[in-house]
Image 1 (cartoon, rainbow, N blue to C red):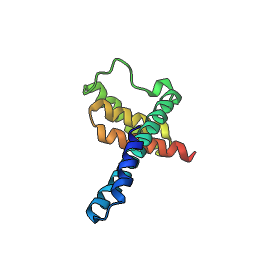
Image 2 (image 1 turned 60 degrees about the vertical axis):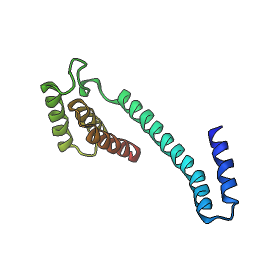
Image 3 (image 1 turned 180 degrees about the vertical axis):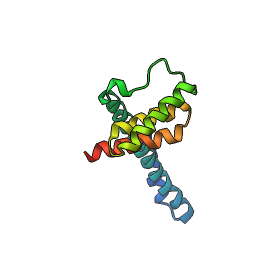
Image 4 (image 1 turned 90 degrees about the vertical axis):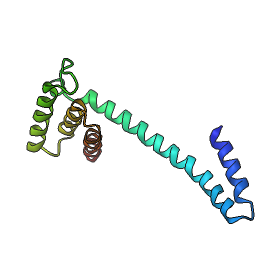
Length: 124
């Protein structure tokens, strides 16, 4: 419904004589499409990473007893990074690195590692 309204208003603005209003109309058309694409991309990333979590061996995952930002979280991250250094092309290792970064509170690095794990899985 929102997209229909936005497109309708965007087309109305494009049909005016004022170039500034036409530019605004173009933005009204493009921004909802960009937003929709970003939402779809994030949802796909979430489903893909969730599916990957179900495929990782149980012994590679962190224990449920590990508390975020604890010494055990640091140890888990160190072990995951060490495993990854030995085998950098295995997506499961990067998945575990992402979990480790998340446990120590490094969300940006966790997301980058998870995205790399997804890329590796898609190349297989």
